[in-house]
Length: 386
Image 1 (cartoon, one colour):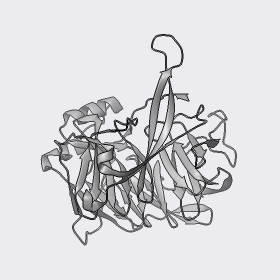
Image 2: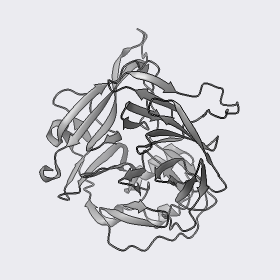
Image 3: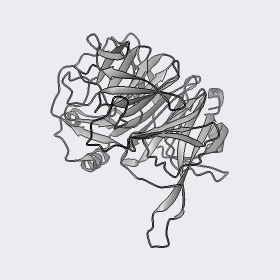
Image 4: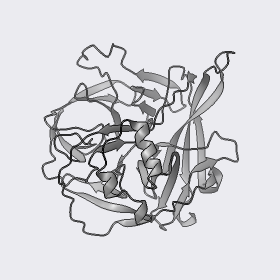
């Protein structure tokens, strides 16, 4: 068990750069996903899921997970990474923690050849069966096998920007950039040549971004069937990304007056993240896009409207084009559910990481509480039943 750690669900970086950006010509209209902004439903998990499995995690005294945690299911077990804790945890198939990768050296010291100091992001290469850890301070990606043993290190030839979030498709490494990057783009692509990543975005028609402010939230990049997808924070589109094109494939269909306006796009930088969220809550616009996951049957994502802590969950059925939408989730079997944050997927199952709050650590008033963690694997009803 471990004391719970609360954190803000996002990162705000301010900048005053903007340049003309070119968006690829669209060959077909994006598929519309109709959103109800008035829907703040509370649903029961058992009414929308046809299979639920809960896996308690054990030996987790040293584990502390935030809302930014990512989960990867491998042949050897489960890997959970957390950029806020700068740690990667390896569990066996029974949920037992068997290894932890976390920098132990002082942050002021220079990293050694095979060490990372920070976990900016992680990615699971399911073909090579390797866990990748991005450390932008070292300008490297450290790769481990699914048991946590060092495999090799990729060096980023960082003559051009490389983002704080990334995914890899074959030899292309696609990253989401912040506004202050010198290329003034929303995305960047590097190509792997041996153990070196080299810039390869010359032909990329990039996603437009907001003039003064960029927000990074949870899992805005996704890989599905050897293709990369991007869900920018303050837009109404989900893009499919290649080395030359960014094509909108899904459009969030809600009233035009709830979308980001030119006034917001040209607004001056906010002072901090709290000021930013207060402004967005008062703007009467959709914001805080995050948690994009795609499988054969569903497209899942989250967004905020009016209240940042009341996230709207949307499951879009590819088969029958219907939507399951809710803000809160309950369980008839008394599982620890209220809000869900999907952290990963396993074939047609989605995976969440749930914190189970236990009793206080001491008898003192306002004593911190212990926390256990569990994974919930769930599969939605088939699209024909949605």
